[in-house]
Every structure is written in C-alpha cells, then in structure tokens.
Image: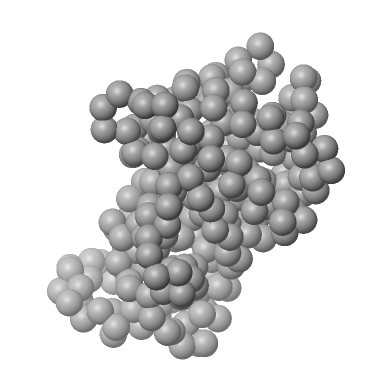
Length: 265
C-alpha cells in the first residue's frame, strides 16, 4: 500500500470502532492525503483505550516508523553539550524526533494523553507519534493504580513507535494565578522524579520538554531555572548515576534563549 492507501485503511478501521465520526469523515476529499492524515491523528486522539487488532498495529507501526524516518531522527549523541557541564545540552525542535533513551511527556493527571483532536500540546504529539498502544498501556497502568497520578511524580512506559526507547510521564503543577512555593516544589519534583525513574532503568540519556509551561501557565523563565537547578543538583548528589546526557528540549525561540543564558551564561 502507498501512504494514502495505508492512512485510508487505518481510518476505515478506526471509524468502524467510532461510527459517530463517520459523518464528519464523509465530508473529506477521499484522495486528499493531508485531510486523511489529519483525520487519522484526530481519530487516534479521540479513541478510548481498548484492544486493537494485530493487523491494525502492524499497519500503524510501519506507517508511523516510516513517518519518523521522513521527519528525520536525531541521535542525541550528536547534540552538542554545554561548555560548563558536559552532561547538559539544549535541542530545539520536535521531541518526537529524538532517539534518546527516554523523552519526558508533560501529562495530565489521568495519564491517558490528550483527547482533543490534533491539539498542539506535547502530550498529544507524543501519543500521536507513539501510536494507540501508548494510551492503552497507560490506561492499564492507571487501572492498577486506582487513582489519578499525583503532581510531581513520574511513570515510565515503552516508547512504541517513537525513536526514544521510553516515555517518562510526569504531571506538572497548573498555575491559575501567582506561582506559589508549593508550585515550585512540585515542578522540581517532576524533574527529580523523572531522573530517578530513568536512573532506576539504567538509562543514559533523557530529554525533558518544558514541563508546566504553555497550557499549564508556569512562567517560562522561572520554570527553566527550576529545571536546570534541579537537574544539576541531582547529578551532583548522584555521581554514580547511569545518566550521561540530559537534553532540555525547547520548541520556542524564547525558551531556547532562556536555557542558553542559564547553561552558558
């Protein structure tokens, strides 16, 4: 199958599970690849966790991995490190391209990913690139836990179709008004918890997104200061850790400038 045929076949199977969206799908131009691809991501975002056929998984996995190669996979060993600390570095771009041992997902407390079709949050991007397996395994994990994920904690899953081997999911604080001392502690806990989870798995590289900024409204400059301070403190306090490279992944020019000032000064 060519890419258009593959996407249409995947959409056909998802619409069979979710017939309530068939009317909207029928309004699309059947042979418009861009529209069909957007529909696929939307249906994946909307789909509740449930079993799926091996045929679907095989087709989805081949397609998503091919897409990753087209976007360009970034080997984190090739990313330049800070002059001041050779374990820290900055990389600007799409975190789903990074072939790190783990990438960090800024999740919500349900830990099931973003259900808003094609939303631009990091949670949506990671789940969309990983495939439907990620939501399903997160659902099973949360069912066993029996309650929502606490702010400042972290859980690890496989990366599935991401170049990264693992995804570490953490729930950052949401800022409604002024940033409180508790908010700062919780954000620091996100970074420390992710590092600890990575170390327990003997991982050597981890890429952090800008946790709690954007949709969660934590001020970018303060969030970056907490991120860098927490990571540096953890590495200093744990000299025997398996972690050899910590990447601060940024998307906006603003965040890149903030991290450059913090790391290079």
